Image (cartoon, rainbow, N blue to C red; front, side, top):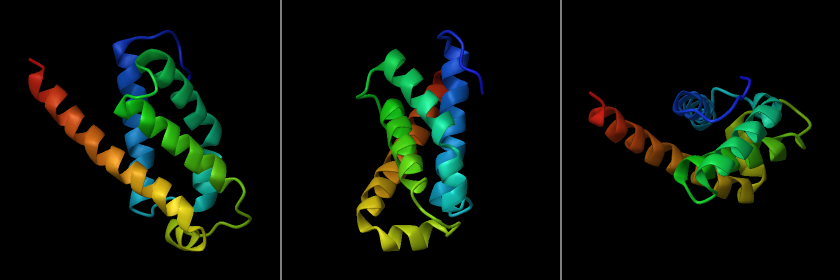
Length: 118
């Protein structure tokens, strides 16, 4: 997705894409190879959200964590499933748990934000 200047719609599109990708990582739909292929896209999302929201917002943290996870996945030399990969590298499991926690937190934020819309 091309990223233009800041707009609320652009930000929402990025958050939706992040949540979609994070959901597929969480449920094991993506292989490690597929996660690795997202590295450039996730890096753009991370840069954008950090520049717009700062590094300490949940949405930015999710983008940073997903980008980091995808960069780590690039070093894997096979198309193994996520669970096997996490079993091989326990430190990556911590990052996976961070993604999982932020995924849930952002889902709740989005639910609250949408309930406030007319």
